[in-house]
Image (cartoon, rainbow, N blue to C red; front, side):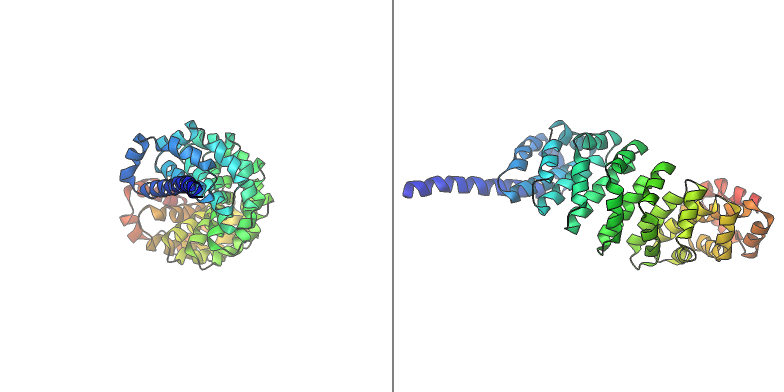
Length: 362
């Protein structure tokens, strides 16, 4: 009996030491000054087998440590790829509990964010199917981690965004926007924007999934970070063509989006102004719609109250509106824009590029 106890103590100590090791490495990886030392010590090769450990908490901590390391720079992200860690993560995503899935999706996101080749390596590992499955999970934290990873993959270029669309993720990302959790709504909207920004075809795929109908009402949501992503996504859709801009307008974003030009959050104001610009640039009818909803006065106020290059989308929008017709140009003049004080104080780049064009159109 004593002999059996002595044997079991060896295994218990081994397990405790593994737990201590991965938790300590995960903690050390949060501080940038430790990263180089961890890398020189060969931490990747030590963490890799622990991803398949028979103790779930060790697996989770190992994945968390790898994610923090890969998140630090592209060299460490490439080390994750070269050590063939991605296939293990992808395999485990379909087998493990929700805590591990969140950690594994974090690693995939941390690798994919650095460059298109690294994002392609994540795709080549078969991660998209597993991430799509995570988007179907009940746990909102798992969905959020998967959506975030999808957004980073899609954000690099049209080819990678197309692979995300082909995986069937868009409809599930639209469902994320409908969830009650604010953080999940934000990440869902951000990922949809990362898909839509590249080409009219990809933007159309987002529209076809019904995204605009669920995004538009969120313009008046009190959460500033959510409004940033919603305005950005609608702008990324509207910029490509008249038809897509009309889809956004038909979702009744006016005059609601103009109230965002007065928001306390500077990023909300900028993204809202950018969205209005992407609508205004297409046709006289769309420009007139903005004018009819009081858009010119709101844009002039936005330009006067903003600073630096944040004024750029407002100035450009006034220029687009004024360029279409004499009547629209007069509406800009009637709203006292562009005002003299802000033309004098504008940064040199904005002044050189925007004001001559805007004033010429007026």
